[in-house]
Image (cartoon, rainbow, N blue to C red; front, side, top):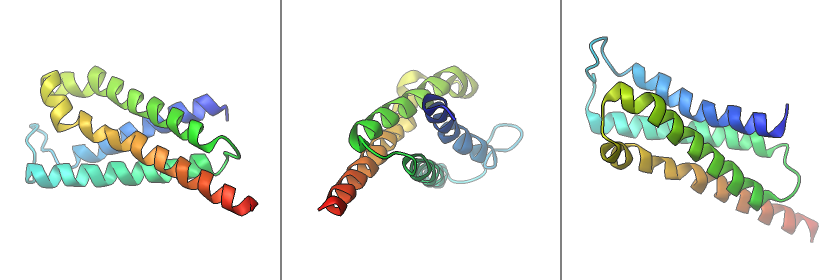
Length: 131
């Protein structure tokens, strides 16, 4: 699979999996069925697990330039997630951009954070392995 297609597909999945899981906690009328703080915690856990699984899968095929690759992947994935939220989630939820960024958007900072951390760990591990 083409590298950029894979990056884009994984970025979309990082957005899609929590989006679908989120529907499990809403009634057909659009009312949340659990405590909003519990919902946010669950969504953060689902997002983080999804990111971790896809990052590990992606980085299995990377053989060099781990840190630049991890920065690029993290920035592309966060961009994909924010754009999809602006196009789909914000109109669906009718929340303002300000509310969105304070309640949801800031959580996406975990995407480049985890990606860069994996890039650094992989870089360090391979450099130690060469010694």
